[in-house]
Length: 194
Picture 1 (tube, rainbow, N blue to C red):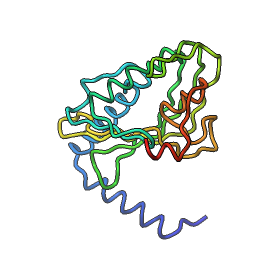
Picture 2: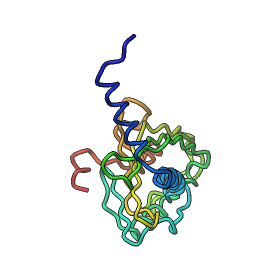
Picture 3: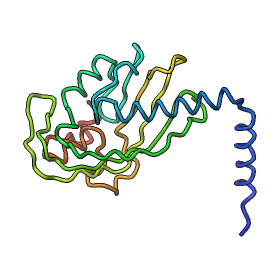
């Protein structure tokens, strides 16, 4: 089979860009990819937070809730303690890809699965006792952006990219957890207001 010319041209352009990057730049990119993985796996939502990874001007954005500054983000995710409600949670995280126009931003796909075998906090004072319900969140797109010191300045997550997969439909982030435990879910009309 022959490769279309456009694919060959794109591959050559990609090789040219990679070869133009010096060893120091490639090393920095590899380190930022490693830090992005470490941060997402310890973002405070899925596991206890590592606040030392966040810049003072950190902002989180989701499809329904946000923006949240550093203090509000850490306070919010700390209320949920998802790791207590789903102690066997499995986080499947793809390799990170560098954004083509924002060199300090990295993207990945995250999938979550687990069993509601612990008490899940809602963040409102209400809690959900163990139900045995299976958590199966479809692919969510996440991004992590860094400053020059390697601290996270922006984090996006909860964006489902294929709602036909998993059992939570268009809901990612904490709304996927809420759906699994039987809690409140906003209609998409209300979600636009939040």
